[in-house]
Length: 195
Image 1 (cartoon, rainbow, N blue to C red):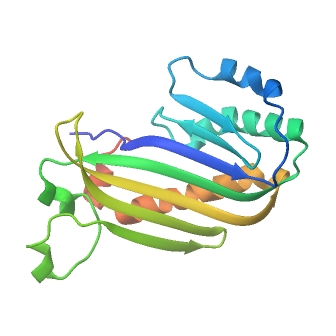
Image 2 (cartoon, rainbow, N blue to C red):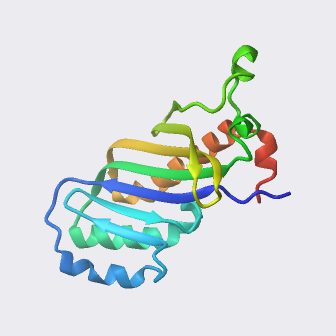
């Protein structure tokens, strides 16, 4: 039986040097967003945040988000980003809490494996562009009336990134997140996801 993609939300935050934000010049952005509330944009003096609950990754959001980013930075005359954060929030429903071992590729001593249910754990993966932080923890999902593994991954890049390198950098961060996703989740679970 095919599982559904566990991706619930994507958040992209691009930070820059503090600048005055003429809010009246960004009123058109709201009209570009889907009316169902699955996407949101927030701009303040230090950052732009793009959020999507359409259950698709940056790869499929790229064209629309590139247009929003490029027009925003052109309007604000910003030439580089000071930091970039790309995060994916995933949630995997469980039949019972002990079943997490069927989904997650974490090795632990046999003596613990039989006794432990799900524990909160964090990992940090180092990449050439920066790092990816992963947080795994159990939670009760009211919608499914059962347990779920919440699986948050955040890719971070600090330091100046010129605007012409912004999208290629975010692509690299997205590829790092895909790599971590495949390392942490079990092959059996991954084989059941739509390709």
